[in-house]
Amino acid sequence: MRPALLACAAAMTAALNSPPAFADEVEDALSAALEAYRAGDMELAKEELDYAKTLLDKAKAQGLAQFLPPALAGWSRTDAEPEALGALFLGGGLTAAATYARDGASLQVQLMADNPMVATMGAMLATPSIMAMQGDVRRLGRLRYLVTHGGEVMALVDNRILVQVTGGAQEADKVAYFEAIDFEGLSGF
Image (cartoon, rainbow, N blue to C red):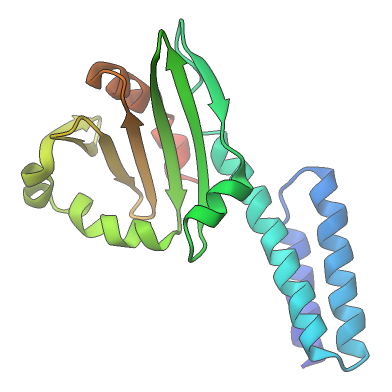
């Protein structure tokens, strides 16, 4: 059992691709887990490993945020806090979002990866005939996306990342923000 814990700790440390502040906290949590394991406190060891995983997920969610488009000319952008978004989508996964505003109009771009909501929406967005019942099916290169009857824009990227553009702004603005996303990079995330 001890080699498995060590392998898990090594893998989590090696997988870390985040700012140095996270690295210290992750390393501290992994060290605490190992100490607890050696002392025979399996519950504390598990809690510390779970905490390290939470920190890694947060770092990865910040990586997801890099795919949010920059504010277009005349617009401002406000990024959402990852902690607040995690509470909204129970069940885990990664979420990044930003709100864009101009002249009293606003819209939100949300990216959700490896989230239970993605699996739920996936069936609808994977089938063109079902998409067509919900609104207008369009293409951006090879990516099929939906503009709903209510003017929301959504797509499923790589069968695991849900992209949604919502809000009270004009449909053309929502489509412009949708099309400004780096989908090639996002599919490799």
